[in-house]
Length: 494
Image (cartoon, rainbow, N blue to C red; front, side):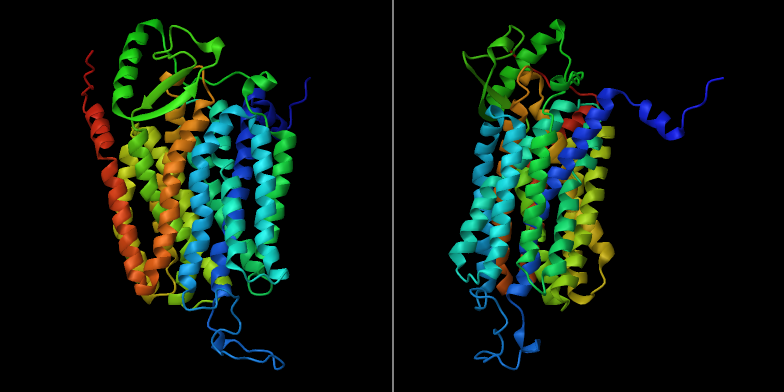
């Protein structure tokens, strides 16, 4: 009589070799991009430590104090224009990130993803640690911190196109919204861990708030070099089905390609010689010009969605510390609730869009609800310290559309029928969409720094306006999806 297998072994053997590899890649890329966000978050936590109300701080007896209000601040952030300086610091990272993102996809296409990603993570760890070393080296030059932030912003652009391209190589279109909704929680998980790690050291030695995350992302870069598998065929796994096109469908897709070439967004992609076939809708010698319908709308929508999300990311802890009078650690811990909500929002957006088939409609609906929720969050934070529920809901509604566009939508467009035979195109499409969104990520914190001295309520009005604009930009795609649900089809001429 044969003995029955242990339940745990039964579970393990019930999954195929392909499934285990896919799970491994999903987990690995999740950890990698978690460390990217983990290393970005400390700057928002230590702002309230670099400039605080020193009149309430007990100073050492042997210290000769000239200014009772600024003696404990870190120069050059001890001046009255400290909010503007924080805005400049954020922008050095974000502008470099936005500019670098447009080129990152091009490099991501041509270089092995394993080398590209691991080198980016190690360099990011070095620059993150260098910011923290300014504390121990007693550096008080704004230019030093700006330079380190800008260089860090450039090398951090290696992350997003590379991890999305890698996941896109391993997963088909089926339940992409749900899978990537769960996977995209790395953004919020990284923000939460970054806040908690930075919070441990912020009051005692804020330099460690950067050095520890720097070590973590550099270590993850070494793991990436040792274990990342770029494509299923590299380990003899089956490739996922992105799109299936037969000969009968070819004419339709050729017409679609010609229509989208006239309608939307132009970018150039190389076509490998072994994939140049008569089944490619549009081919021009060594390069092919594609205009993917929806790239423009989703890119511009992401611009405003990231403006809102990154303003919360960089300014929420300081805002909580100012209006609720919390210490830096407590303000940082409370701000993590916004990111917890972001995890729920990303998964919810993926599930709804998979079920309904309407990526744009899902984004638009969440943005409509998010606008009044932002104003309610401002009101409750201003008058009530305990607003955990409001922060959770706000995080879900603000980060849901952002997560959906940067993952499932990017992957849908990057594995479009027109791009068959050029899987690397996913890296470029992702970089175009996220690069455009990163412009909003740069503008939001800068505007917050400029507007906040006139009153925090004006910052929240700006965020509400950005949400409304993001929603309006998707109106054409929403109309198209609704028509599809009602049984109408888009008429293609020529």
